[in-house]
Image (spheres, rainbow, N blue to C red):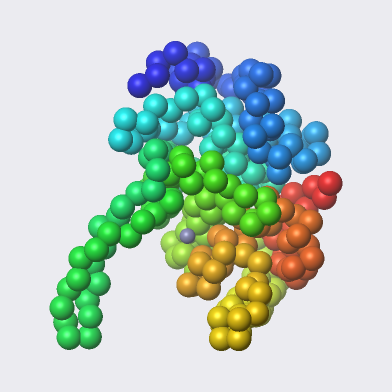
Amino acid sequence: MNPGAWWRQLWGRWASKPGADSIPEILWQATLQSHPFLAERPSDQLWRLRGMCAQFLRSKEFSGAQGLQISDEIALSIAAQACLPVLGLGLHWYDDFKGIVVHPSVMLAPRQLQDEAGVVHSYHEELSGEAMPGGPVTLSWEDVQEGSMAAGYNVVIHEFVHKLDMRDGVADGCPPLPSRDLALRWTRVMQAAYDRFTEALSMADRFGGPPPWLDRYAATAPAEFFAVACEAYFVNRQRFALEWPDLMQLFDDFFGVGQAVS
Ligand SMILES: [Zn+2]
């Protein structure tokens, strides 16, 4: 517990209508400094993001696991990165859950796998984050801090994009879309991009060429491809536009923050 933390005061009852002003300037500037992909956004978007962060901190419940204290830095870093994907969509996209659990480092999740002979094997999977359908988002703070613009890596965006994807009940790489036209285009463009990525990855594995840009974990399922692609889209728009022009256009149309090319 860290009862003196500023975000806890915001979370308290007195801040019934938090706005951008609720976030102290010094904390906000420190957050932008440690997240350059946020700082490069246009000033009107940053002001909106700041206001959304205040609402996010007011409505969500952070808890630290394994003795981790949720500091202002941790709460605001996660809030700002989590709000970026819904900046143009609205915070109501996250209204199906309240809890955000932060672990100091990687989590070990118990898993079971049944082999062909029917034998059940128990093991632990290492997780940097996890999003439960209708439930909390869990993050490893160590992995949050390892975000990379060059690699297009960002665990907060990854897990919160899963929440958007799961809003219609299925994690399939397709969030609820506002029109039939966009839904048709989504299926076509995403399928083509997923096929291109998995093909490029297997060619690189087989012939030793350079692997495609994006974490290879994207090849495990369409839902993971969507989450991984969004990490890169939000943290490195310049490279993303070069590598995935079709996805760039599609994501700009869906997320509604496409004007933010610096
Ligand atoms: Zn994932």
